[in-house]
Length: 283
Image (cartoon, rainbow, N blue to C red; front, top):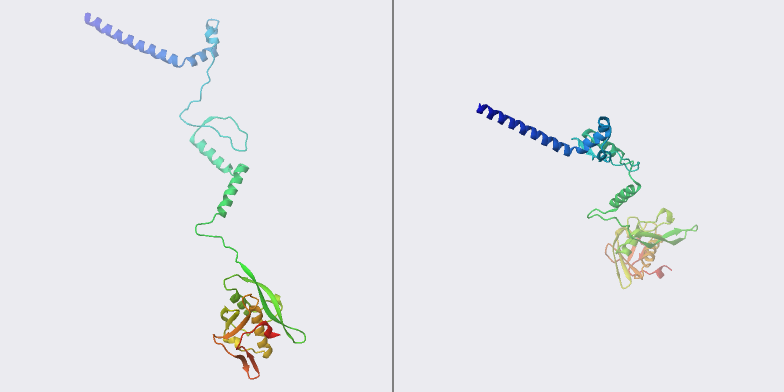
């Protein structure tokens, strides 16, 4: 008999413990959810319907604003698009909604770009275009100089007259050589003149010493098909062109590096070149 009583007492103790645990759980739940309980009681007018009046503590109770809580999905705030009216629309989106929104924003971004951002982008692009690549320099315009060249004009009476023209040629450390080579190349159509220097004549070298320019020409310079006027004219063109330089007073002609006394093609056509020519030699 005592054994049965002992088992019954033990069982009752377990039930009591379980009831006590449930009561504690209910108390904890009530403390945690008291705001919800109070809000529900106030919103449903529970006490007013049951006992006819709502307790004062419940009337003075203010429902607290709940913070948005995650329901397991991705929480994002909708950012206002530049250029559109800002809206307050916080919400919860799933991954598909977020991807769709991201694609729409990327598609509309260039159209909604602010003027300042566009200007900044243009300045950046312009700066990149102007930047020099390593080891690469912008080409500089070639320097030029004015050269005075002397050609020939034949008047209506057949008289041979010299004509000077000013032409721009590349600037270099050998201005006399460059000028004589430009003369040998002949006149331009716009210069309306002619040259009596034999075609194919080349300048082989040029040196200046004590005011005398020693100009060394190829063998083509030695023979002129026009005759005496041709020889005189070709020498005059060279002398007047060379003496435009302040350091040149006269010209000594050389043929293939040799100093000769005459150039010409026959007994009746000879021109003395054994000594330097000056401008006064043609007066």
